[in-house]
Image (tube, rainbow, N blue to C red; front, side, top):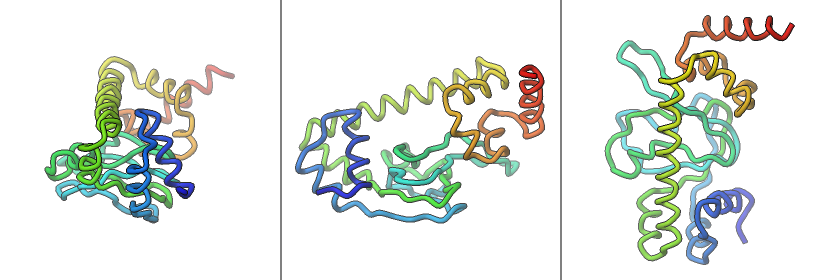
Length: 198
């Protein structure tokens, strides 16, 4: 019988492929459950990152560090999401991104090579890996189109509409970076929208 966190992970896996199999249950039972303090790195750019993480509780951010020291937020992951440097885990190359816990966070650690080994003998797990990669590609394409093809106000309104939890849980400086603007610009956008509602 899987505990609550592993049952949640299995549900997320099954959302992409029919992987409710005895071999998968055995693998899930062996996964490390890790608690991480807020402001702690799960992944560091330049280092190996062989694991992917399933967020059981909490919130993480995935970000890049520019040469001038500025942080660029690429994504936020909450309960039920996968996080980590997927490219580094899959290729063995050093990570190009950081992953940091924004809140006290609990994760299940998924060693990517073990998942690949499991998939070698189980077509449903192979299907999961393919669909997960496709999903990542679609999300990346959508994010690029959003950044290149919409205004900052349109991007902010999309968050209000599609992901209001970001407004409640992500500090304004990180949200502004995610939108590709400064904190001052974000405050102006919020002010203009508030005045329109009055």
